[in-house]
Length: 146
Ligand SMILES: CC(C)(COP(=O)(O)OP(=O)(O)OC[C@H]1O[C@@H](n2cnc3c(N)ncnc32)[C@H](O)[C@@H]1OP(=O)(O)O)[C@@H](O)C(=O)NCCC(=O)NCCS
Image: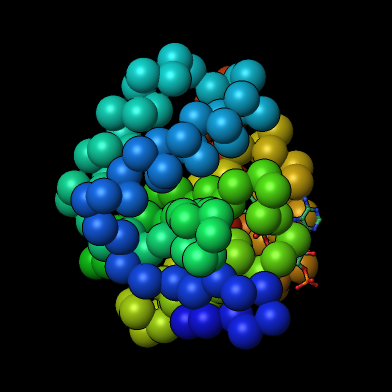
């Protein structure tokens, strides 16, 4: 997928994308103080990248500006993260659209209840709540996409 106006495109991830993916991920985690240790999150990210399909959004000068991991069999999205400087440019919805097209059925993901910004974005995109999952600090909402 290519966004002609904003100049980014989406493709499968490659190993050389990893440093940029990790940088974006770590930057985003700073906004989630309720999350557990960063190293646990990084381990889960690496496991997800090695076991699953992943896409990156790339812009010519900026390089990787967002990424998404996808458990294809479950149509489940463990990660969708966009560089803060590139938000509200359609990158998140573009990554979700590509993943939705790849699996051919509605996607699901879990979002922290504290992550109101992401919940607002998913609501705008037509996602709806399926269930509450987790408890206390780990309480999340399971959402299903259109
Ligand atoms: C959530 C996230 C992936 C959205 O990515 P994005 O590239 O900014 O999203 P898009 O530009 O594609 O926006 C899609 C729609 O959501 C809306 N939207 C995006 N962020 C929003 C926000 N914080 N509040 C309200 N609406 C928002 C956009 O306006 C757009 O609506 P439109 O189609 O009517 O214009 C991004 O904010 C992000 O990476 N957040 C940090 C990591 C995170 O929380 N990931 C999700 C974990 S489950």
